[in-house]
Amino acid sequence: MEQIIGNINGIGFTLGDTILELSYLIAALLFVVGLKLLSHPESARRGNFFAGGGMVLAMFTTLILHKDAGGNSIQLTNVWIILSALTIGSVIGWIVARRIKMTAMPQLVSLFNATGGAASALVALLEFPNADMNNLGSVLVTVLGLFIGSVAFSGSMIAYGKLDGKVKDIFSGVMKYVNLLLLVAVVAISVFIMISGQTPVQLNWAIYLLLGVSLLYGIMFVMPIGGADMPVVISLLNSFTGIAAAMAGFIYNNQAMILGGILVGAAGTILTLIMCKAMNRSLLNVIIGSFGGGGTSAANQEGGDMKEISLSDASILLSYSKSVVIVPGYGLAVAQAQHVCHELEEILSGKGVNVRFAIHPVAGRMPGHMNVLLAEADVPYNQLIEMENINPDMPNTDVVMVIGANDVVNPAALNDPGSPIAGMPIINAHLAKNIIVMKRGRGKGYAGIENELFFGEKTRMLFGNAKDSLQNLVNEIKSL
Image (cartoon, rainbow, N blue to C red):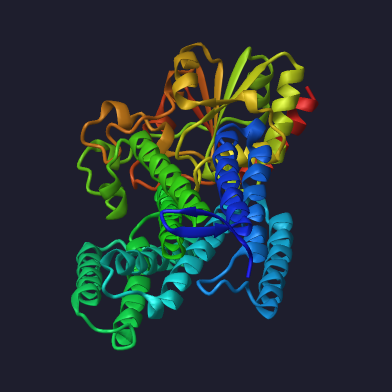
C-alpha cells in the first residue's frame, strides 16, 4: 500500500493521488488554453496541440496512478488492452484525417462526434449496474449520460449520411409528433428507473429500453432537418457530446472529463445560438425543419429572365476592376473548386485587383465550412471577411462573384416580408456595381424560392460546374 501523506476531513490521500489530481487540473487548464487558441485560425493548430496534450496527460496519469476503492492499481492486462485500443484508434484516425478531402470534412466531423457520443453512452450503460439506486443524483447523471450520448451518436450518424448523400430528408408534419412521443417515452422510462426502488439488475430491461428509444429519437430528431441547416445541427450534436462526456465525468468523479465536457458543451451551445441568430431563426424552428416552403410571397414565383455572360466578357470585367468580392457557398465545396478559386484570386491580385472573400456564418454544411475549405487552398486568412464587415463595402465593390451560394445572397430576405427567409441576414451582393453568379443550373436554393438577385439588372449568370467555369475563366484571363 502507498503511504498516506495527508488527511482532509478524515479522508487520507497519497502522493499518487495528489499527482493524479494535479495532472487533471493541468489537463483542464490545457483544455481552456486550447479552446481559446482555437478561436482564431492562425493559432488553431497550436490550440489542438494544447488540448490534445491535456488529454494525453490525463489518460496516461490515470493509467499509471489510478487506484480503486481497495487501493489496487489498474491490472496490467487491462493497461495493455487500453494502450492497444488507443494505438489502433490513433492510427485509424491519423490515416482517415490525412486522406479525407476538405469537401468531406463535415462528414468526418459528424463521424468523430458520433464516436464521442457512443463512448459516453457506453460508459453510462456499463456503469449502471454499479449505480447506487438510493442516490438519485448518481442515477440521474447515468440516465442523462445514456440518453444524451445515444442521441449524439445516432443523430450524428444520420447527419453523416445526409451530408454524404446516403440519407434523404423527411419533410413531414408528422415527424414533430413522433419526436414528441419519443421524448415523452424517454422521460417516462427515466423517471421510472429513478423512482421504482428496484435494483440495477431488476431494471436491466428498462435501461436497455431507454437505450433503444434514445437511439431512435436521435435518428428521428435529425431526419426532418434539411441539408442547409446542417451547420446548426452539427454544432448542436457536438454540444450534446460534450454534455454526455461531462455526465461520464460525474459518474467517475473525474474533474478533467467534467470540465472538458462542459467546455465542449458550452462552446457548441453558444455556436449553435450564434448561427441561429445569423439565420434570424429560433433553434426550435431549425429542429422541426420548417425552413423552406410555406411562403406566399412572389418570391416563390418566377422572377424573370436570367441574363448570361460569356467567359471573355467576365474575364475582362474582372481584370479591369479595382475591387472584387467572391461569395463562396456549398456549390464551391461540391465542385471541389477551392484551389482554382485561389488561383483566380492570385491572378487578379497580381493585376492589382483587391480581392476578398465574403463569408456568411452558415454557408456550407458545417460551422466554418467555407473558412476551412479556403484555408485548405492556402487563401490568406486576412482575405476572408465576415458578413457584417464586408457588407458596408458592397456599394463600392466593382464585381461580386457568387460561387455556389444561393439563399445567403437573396435580397428577398430584406425586402419581402412574405418570404420564407424574411429577416435572415444576407451578404448584400445586390448592392455591388456588377454581379456574376456561377451556378450549375437554374434551380432554386434550399428555401425553395427564386433568388431575386439572379434576375437583377446588374447580374449576369455563368452556368456550369464551378471548377470548370473557374478554370476556363483563369485561362481566359491569362490570355488577355
